Image (cartoon, rainbow, N blue to C red; front, side):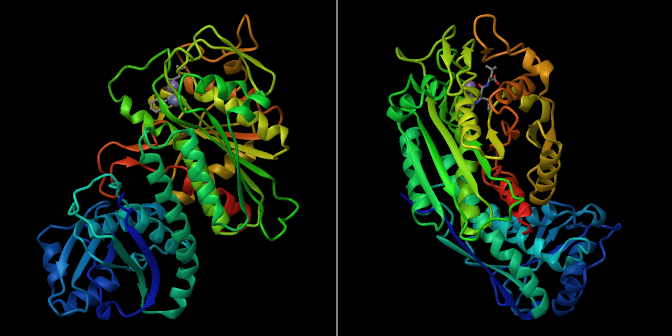
Length: 514
Ligand code: BES
Ligand code: MN
Ligand code: ZN
């Protein structure tokens, strides 16, 4: 199988006009009718005998976000090509503007089969943003945009090279030093997110619960402070994890509970919570006996995205050596119809002891999460955050712009909202209170797994809340956020890796690292 593109990000001190690279990238705001050139653009324009000015005068580039224009260096500057990337209105600029601009440039660079790319987007004058944070956003964006999933394309010349060398360039040593801190973290996070996208993009005949567990073991093996244990079917039975077992019963690939533990070398500050991240990894969701319609069912290979976001976050957290104790719990099952499947009407006893009447086998995510959440609570984790492609209803509510956030703790809500802003992986707070829990009560068991038609994202969250007792908890419903339908300007189609940046940022901020 072909390797995914290998990306390397570093910083370099160089004057922009003297920067030897195949593609030099600068940012440009759209303010004004004809955008006023940034300092860099002005200096480069002089060297290029006014080529940038002419391009802008023609109206071919206005600095609007998600647009770009390429000019040629013609030996007048050291770079072969110069790309202007639009950053939109200056007053609206955020870290995500920079991240997406870097991603747009990187995607273009891979499309043009370039070996080198130099980014100077931080110099456009986004003065309110902190330099280190911009460095991180550029590095994350470089990974994000250069990513492609083509490991099964056997055509050797399918339009990309094996590697891309990205440089973040600046003439000032001081700025570079500040940038570099962010760039290093951004490279770790960017790589983790690309790893997440690859595992998520792999189809269900490649990734099933046992092979996912194997991938988790391999990932953890090479990283200091990270351990991986896996409950197989026998251990799940011994532990009475009835939810995971029920969902996995219909498949030839038996279910697993993957347990990753990161223990920092440095003793964490006393005030820091012991965190558990819990991710739904349904390697294929056919709906089971309550089978889904066949249109777009292929996309249900991405129903493992929450679990994989947790897997990759554990990789990032351990590589960053964050001084905080974090566990990653990944319940994994394949939801298929067969003679051994669980059925509508079944009553399942979960790990917590609570019983659930199954009304719809397609509401399987909450069944596997119920066991993993209860396990996290039993193991005395202080803060538990689950991530799941849980409900179509959340997609109906929020589209593919924001993940649903439900929680029993106002501080955690605030922290996750801040992490969303910093990471560009957005969330929106939705309710999950007692009125929704009421909708999930069964007459013949403690709970039922499917509620009324309306408010499906909130009733699902309220169901999960029954398994965390008083523990500080948040739930991220990432249905709709897991996939890019068509290629966006800044991203290839397929898995988004959503959640890796959000969760890693949340944990970094907790430890005082930003
Ligand atoms: N994995 C799906 C949710 C989903 C749907 C994610 C579309 C991404 C895109 C989940 O397991 C599911 O089937 N949920 C049901 C729950 C219902 C039966 C209560 C749903 O949302 O329809
Ligand atoms: Mn389902
Ligand atoms: Zn599902």
